[in-house]
Length: 83
Ligand SMILES: [Zn+2]
Image (tube, rainbow, N blue to C red; front, top):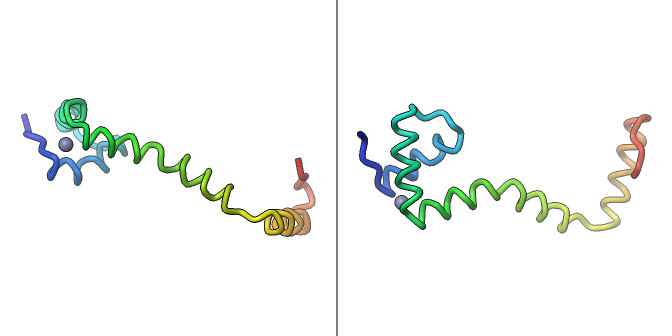
């Protein structure tokens, strides 16, 4: 079985998270992540990233920009309804 270290793991982790690794490599990496807090934290942070990014984007959107954005969308999209 291919030995997984943190160094080779970082390259493999992206493929692992995409689910495109061969089954044996995937299993080896899974075994490494299970026993490696550093890699486990990386996997968690990667999986959480879209949610964190979305929340950060929502929080960073100023109210006046949101209003003008909705007005813009209404003007461009007749079917768009503000909630
Ligand atoms: Zn590791």
